[in-house]
Image 1 (cartoon, one colour):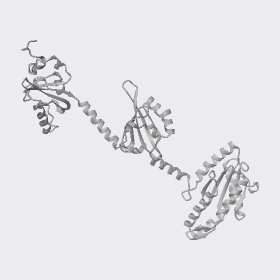
Image 2 (image 1 turned 180 degrees about the horizontal axis):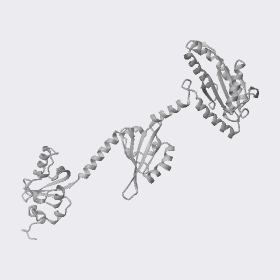
Image 3 (image 1 turned 60 degrees about the vertical axis):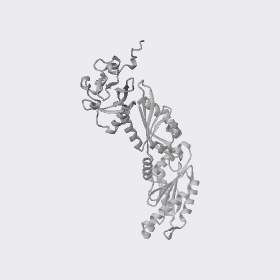
Length: 436
C-alpha cells in the first residue's frame, strides 16, 4: 500500500455524507446521524427517517434539536455536550419527539470523530428505539408496586415450587426473617402434608391442564400454626407451548374461617349455657343411632328437668334463673365422659346421649347428676337448692328411632317428677310411646 494512500479507517466520515451514503449505514436498523463540529446535520440514514418521521432533506442543515422533546432539562444536554466536546463518548437514553408529536425513547451513542491532529471534525451517533422496552419496564414497575402493596401472598415459582419472586406480604405470611433470599425458598416446605398432597394430585395438574386452579389450602407460619388461605395457581407457557413457570396468589382467610366457625357455633349451641342446642342434639342423636346399629350396642338417652325452677324465677328473678341454668350446665358436663352429649333443649330441660351405655350405666349417670344438682347453688350471695327429675330410655330396649326414644325418656322424666324427683327408667306402664 502506498504511503500517501489513506487507510479506510482514517478516512473522514464527511466523505460519505449527503445523499451518497455508505451502503452499510443505509442498511443499518439503528438510526445514524453525522453532524459537523457545531452539531449541524450532514447525514442521516433511512432508519433515522423511519424512527423520527423526518425526511432526509428536512433534517440536513438542521441540528438534532428537531427531535428534542423538552422532557429532559437543559442541565442534561449541557452534560451531554460537555462529554462529547471533550472528546469522550456519550452513552444514554434520550426522550425525543417525532415529527408527528409522539414521544419515543432512544438508546443513544454519540462518538466524536477526530482528524489526524486530534481535532473534532464531526460527531457520529447511532440510536435505537427502545420505547417498547421502556414501556414494558414501566409496566413491570407498576405491577411490582401493586404486588408489593397487596396484603395477599404473591409468588412466582418453578414447577417444583422453587421461588423466583415473592412479595413482602408473602414473606410476612410465611414469617420469613428480614432479607431472606426468596430464591432459596421452596414453597411446598411451608405447606402441611395434606396441602402438598392436594396440590400434587389436583392443584398443579389442573393448572397445567386448564391454565388455572383455585381452592382452599393452608401454609404453616413460623410459629407452626396452620394458616388457612384461599389460593389460586396459574400456569404460564413458553412460546413453544410448554409450561415454563407457575404463579400463585394466596389470601389469608383466618378471619373468614373464624367467622364461619363462630356462626356455626352460634347456630348449634345455646347462648346462655354454651351447651349444644336442639339442632346439634338431634344431629348427635342421628349419629348415635347409626353407630349403635352398626356396632350392635346400646346407648342411653336421659331427659333432665329441674325441680322448682319456675318458683326460683318468680321469686328471685330471671337473672338468678339464668345463672342457675348456667351452673347446672357446668355441673352436668362434669358428670359425663368426653364421648357423651348434654344439650339444653329449652327452658329448664336438658337431654343427654350416653353411647355404649345400657340401663345400669344410665342409672349410674342419673345418680351422679342428682348428687351434683342436689348440692346448694350460691348465686350472687343467694344460696338455693334445685333438684331434678330424670327420665331414662335405652336403645334398642325402648325404641329404635329418635322419636320413640325421646317420647320414652320424656314419659319417664314426668313419672319421676310425679314421684317427687329422682330418676325413672321407662316402663311400658308409663304409656305407649309414639313417634314424633
